Image (cartoon, rainbow over all chains, first blue to last red; front, side):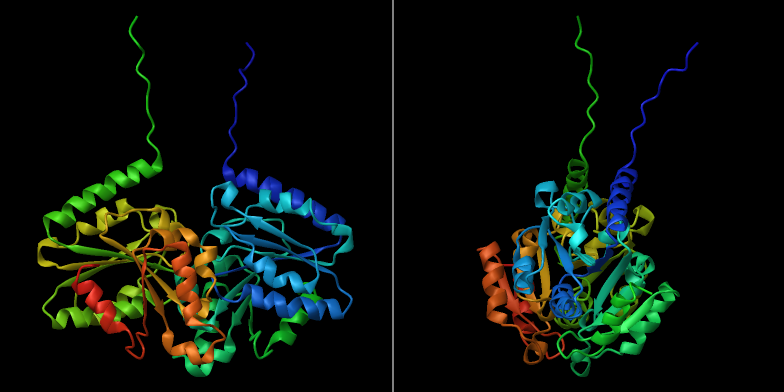
Length: 221
Length: 221
């Protein structure tokens, strides 16, 4: 007797990873270095890109941004003066998702000429929880943790820090005005993830931005 | 022919609302005023409670806190010196949920003597997206938006501001050190929700804390 074929419903994560693998293949084919930037709302992801991309452009390196938001095109508008390709990826039509999914990246890639790019930045939705769960096909995950958020965040939101390759402690210029100890941030980050690289930056003052640029130029090494 | 009975699987939100209604009934029976406090990570929810609860205690009003976190008991430890009942509600055993669910509040309530309380604060998980979707049985939803997060957050995360009764713009003491316009915060909040109450506070300097306390004493009127 023939074994009856059993339908398999694949789980959401498996579907998500399949799309991510397709994205990865496209990135590899085009020699792209892709960074998935994640953080709480308002930690400074867009400001970081505003300051970083011109430095890459000045070196003849071509960037594009997939700008993730639930709704609005506010961040894309802020990056428009950079005159680079930007695709706004809004999750609202997909149910207001709290993270960027690999299917949305895949849809966004159709609007980009990948062969004409060196760097692709995916600015994820401001959320220190959910985006950490999803692989998009990127080379590196970067978490931005701003000084005003407080030193204990890595201990309270461990997955994000466990999954990330690099943590940028941002808004270092505010240190004199806050009751926080930047060294304690670093200690807590490393408690959660012993292999993560940590850089202290201020997009406003420019402090630490050189090391971040170096990290990008070495493609995350 | 008899109509075959059709099984109905109720959706997650319906289950969630049923638990919330049960919580509500308990709150009503005990005359409790319940505030669900939500924000991005590090906007200052715990600090707000550290400063608010002693002011209520000084007026003979009895508070308790349900402290929501994915993992850790760090915030509960911070509130321990207040010598009030605190229940730590961690979502990690429930799959690391990015918000507090009504079932978790229900479980937490079993550890509290509600008849001995006037105020119950539910400190939600730091997340400006998902917690806005879930009614827990509370009287009022309060969103805390800190000045360093930036003025455009209400436009980018509209549901949270649409659902909340009160918005506290926090960390006002940092205003001189940031390139932000507090009036613009208020304008954007009111664009999203014309009926929301907005108060500017600094738990650090104490500025605006009197108005917040008044709002609590009037039970959100």
